[in-house]
Length: 389
Image (cartoon, rainbow, N blue to C red; front, side):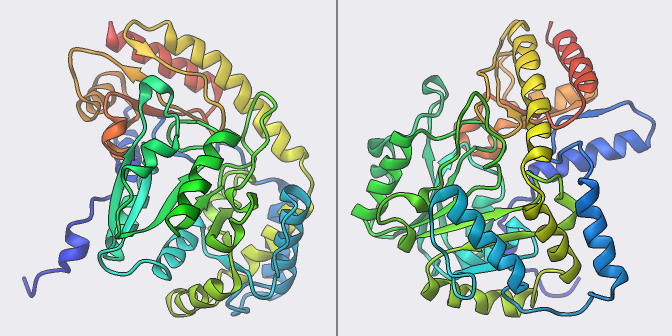
């Protein structure tokens, strides 16, 4: 073997959710009937009108490079969306970038604000890719432990004790992957207070904004008083429009910072794929009916399966407030979450994600997606119940 690989990359853990899904697919290819509750891929097909728009763009030859910021009409549609839904004003020419996925939006945004040694606060349990992205940029991820006993409540005091002179930013995700929590107005205000008090950047990941229940309405942190100038909003089409494979995201932020982020975009990917942007434009223009139908089905699964999970001895599962994940606490033979995930895959042929993948605060829990059919969910719960008896 030649010279060793980068020590930075070597120190980063692979994605647990991807690894679980890959292992589940491998077992399926070997003929094992595995139910995969490990990934966050909606089981719905991208709506026909969106697919038609993307196909037409390809057939029309719209297959070349476009403006690195994204096609003008899509940026305008995104700006209009934020004005309509959040009462915010974004300049589509200076404050919005269309990206090749929400992950790319996260990466290039953090690239523009994190210097080596800068600390970035993560409200944990936190999505598995935040910590590695910060590490790849030579920043220092700092887990802010939220407690399962308090349903992962966020307060000023919990955040503030993790702030140091090196703290540069805080990443927020609501609705949350993995916990399903939707931050209350009081919790959002707590985060905003800390950000303004210590002059921190805020990166708010709003990818699940449309998937909320029981009359909740998503509010982005950027819409709070005096927060737009210090907040980067990251969003995308994957979850709301069942467009995970299209790899289309976007970000919005203050013009001076977006100008710096654009440099990273230009050198990293040049632009998001041209024809997927036409599909994204169709998605935003299509109205809420398709989203509402998907959310109604998620809601049905959420209520039925939460009840079923809580009937299993040793399992405690709060009712999710948003997104499409259960994050139950499981007490079984003193197993940690990694061992429990392996046990359920091997014995019950159900793939789940261990809570430790989302930080130390997730230990003792497992994450299960309900972005699969109710029939498969019910079968999976029966298998889990049998394995835990």
